[in-house]
Image 1: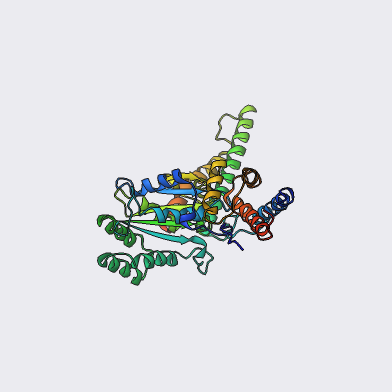
Image 2: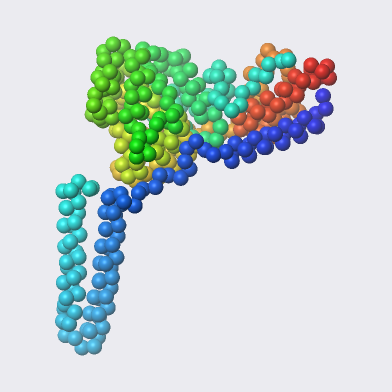
Length: 108
Length: 277
C-alpha cells in the first residue's frame, strides 16, 4: 500500500470533518435567553436605577449650590437652597417605602 | 470486505468505551458512598465523548466495587434537548419531572412506584415539597436515583433566567443531608460554573455540591489502546507509522481518532481485497 497518498487524503478528510462539525449549528443556543424588557422584575430594577440617577443628580447639585453660597457669604447651608435638601430627604424616604410596597405586591 | 469496527458521529457502546477510568471512578465513588451520594458535572469540548461517558457510567455502576445494581440505584438518562418547551418558550418543567418519574416507575418496588404514580397523577407534578418527600422515601429505602442529564446547557439556557425554578428544585433536592435520594451527573460543553453565570441566581451557587470533571483528548497510549480494542478480530493491523499518523492528525480527540481510523481501515481493507497488502 502506498502510505503517502492515503495519509494525505485521510488528513484532508479529518480536517474537513473537524471544520464542518465545528461550524454546524449547535442543537442548543449559544446565547443565553434574553429577559423581556416588559418583565416586571426588570422594570423594578430600572426603577432602582432611575432613583439612583435622580438622587445622585440632586445630591451633586445641592452640594455644589450650597458650597458656592457658603463661599459667597451665605450664613447657613440650609439658607437659599433649603428646598433642595427637602427634595433629597424625600428621595431618601421614598426608597425604603417603595421596597416595602414591592414586597407587599409580591414583586420581590 | 472486512467490517469497519470504528464508530464516529454517535455515542459508542459501553463495552467499546476506552479509558476515562479515573473520571468514572470519581463519579461512581461519589454516587456509591452512602455518606455522600454526591453529584458530578462533566464538561468537555464538542464530541469529546460526554454522552458515551454517561452511558459508560450506567454500564459499569453495577459491577464491583460500586455494585449500584437495581436494588440500590436507578439511573435515568435524559437528553435535555429532547424536553419540549412550554408556550412561553421555556423548558417544560412538568414534562421534565414526568419523564423522570415515568422512567423510575418501571424499576421501583411497589410502595415507591405508588408514590411516583401519585405525583404523576397530581395537579402539579413540579411541586417541590412532593418531590422532596418522594426522594426522601427513596433515600429511606436505601436507594438512590442518579439523574444523568446530557446537554445540560439546554436546560440552563431554556430556563427562566430570572427565576430558574427547575434548577432551584434540583439544587434543593441534592442539597439534602446524606443519605440523599437524588444525585445528578450533568454533561455540558462549558463548565457548570460558567453556565450558571448566565442566570440571575439567588443564594449559594447551583454548582456548589458538584465535583467538576473535564474530559480531555486522549494521549498517545490511549489512542493505541483504542486502536487495539477496535481492531481485535478484524484481521487488519495498523503499523507504528499508522498509529503515529492517527495521533498526529486527530490530536487525540476521540471522535477524530475514530474517524481517521475508520478511513485508514477502509483503505487497508480495500487494498487487502485488491491483494496489495
